[in-house]
Amino acid sequence: MDMTDARTWHGMESQSESQLELQSPSIADGIPGFRDAEAPQVFLLETARGAMKNNNYLVVDPVTHQAVAIDPAWQPDVFAEALAATRATLSEILVTHTHDDHIDLAIPLSEHYNCPIRMSREEIAWSGFEATRLLPLDGGPWQVGAMTIEPILTPGHTPGCVCYRIGDNLFTGDVLFAEGCGICFELDAAYRMYDSLQDLKQRLAPHTHVFPGHTYVRPPGQRFAELMRCNIYLQFSDRESFAAYRLRKGQIGRKVLDFK
Ligand SMILES: [Fe+2]
Image 1 (cartoon, rainbow, N blue to C red):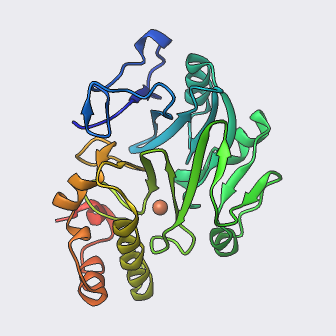
Image 2 (tube, rainbow, N blue to C red):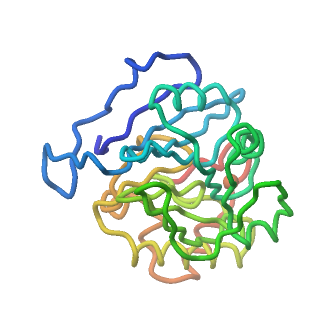
């Protein structure tokens, strides 16, 4: 497993701070053993509702102890416990897209911690999402503490999907999984997904760690170079063949996760 400074906080069972464990030796910029003490810290918060499991994330600035939550859903106690354990203050909520399993807790957490919800204007227009502290993205990066947060508009799964780059980490929601990419519901959406993945291929450094909204086989935090090697949806070089594959039959219901 290839991860840097990512720790797991399980929502299914309460854990004390001492049980927050580094999942692998930290590696920064290819230098084994090197760890940037001021780099954003990524905590994986695994939450569940019934049979569904989500990857939520808490990203903490170790300099100021400000934190952002990404795609919070379902278990508010998980966030409260993780914030307490990291001694961090929740400053913002970043939403990749408005499907329920990525946004279920956005408004409750926003009200409880009095912090804004970030979302693309395209997603707001498409979904009609409303919240008192909703703050539409303006396209450019911004700061939370010492962390620079860069939104990358990546439509396809929904019209306003956004990936967020924070340091060497990319949070992809349902745009890009380790094993595949999010489902697209019609031809134009598949075209847009192809364009979005091509854009990511242009933008991302090979050592970027990818943190998706769901885990199927490979753990979150894989380097983009590894996804370029193993993810079939990153192999296409034209829109038509990508769209034909993405829209192939058998991709609904229980087979939605069949990436083969
Ligand atoms: Fe989704």
